Figure 1 (cartoon, rainbow, N blue to C red):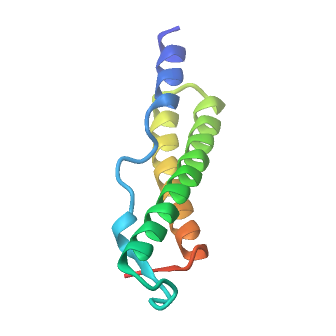
Figure 2 (figure 1 turned 135 degrees about the vertical axis):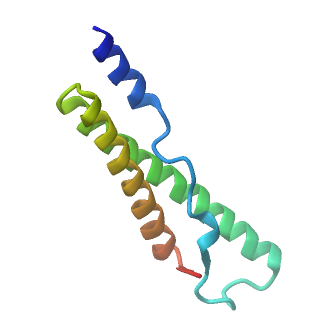
Length: 101
């Protein structure tokens, strides 16, 4: 029972503690005329990408954690979930016209 409760609580934990938000710049600097437009576009892209990445990582963590209820599996789920977050965030930012610094 304790193991089941631990697994369900772990599924609610944040998948990734830090996001690679600062690692991206606009691929086409002439796309926006003002700094305010550039900043707003970056914030919007980051928000959308964070949401997509959190959803993908949470789903992966939930899937792996539910396969078997063991501490080893929970650690693996968290690790794979963090990888999924980073990958999903990066892919989303790249598809929104940003490149890594």
